[in-house]
Length: 140
Image (cartoon, rainbow, N blue to C red):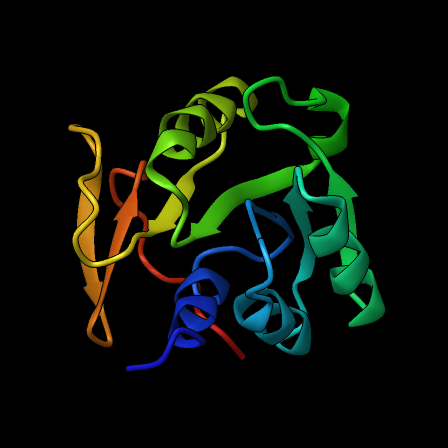
């Protein structure tokens, strides 16, 4: 089980544009998604994190999930977050609902998630999703 496995989970469900919310300085999943050929961008309120993401070749934007710039997310098929701080989970879910796209959250192991999310075990990772059921895409 590695955090990059989350990228394989997302890649199995999304074929287009995806956004990571609250990337911080953990770029492993976004870089793996980019390597897998997905159109990924990352968002954080921290300008330093966004600058570092750009240095690594990622498309990155400063945005505040509590007051998001909806135009930034035009065309996304999904949102995801890797170990978000508990206070941004509900705003991520609210943004996904506004956009009409699924959200995938990989929390810290002890973080409590809001009710109504579906829990999936993928390669030992506990992933919470707003998606009711969507079989993985067939690749190749």
